[in-house]
Image (tube, rainbow, N blue to C red; front, side, top):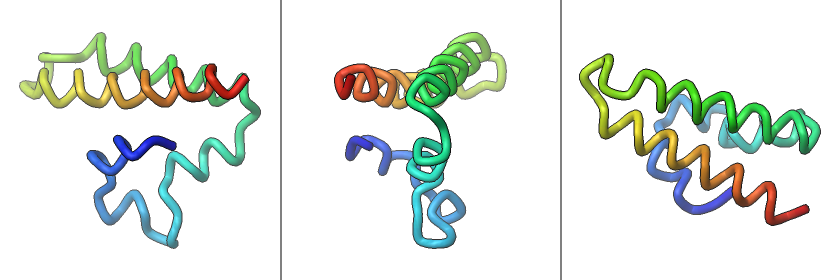
Length: 75
């Protein structure tokens, strides 16, 4: 994963010595991981601003978009 993931790497995401997104990617097929990223992009985009943290939601969507782009570039 890109270095950008460190933006959202609180301690509870790295408990057990592995970043949660790395574990998810390792457990899913390439197609499943791409779908996971797309779903999270949609989630954060569609709720942006509804919880009072619009910028934070947009940045999270961007992180998932970057991970999706990286996954596509690997193919």
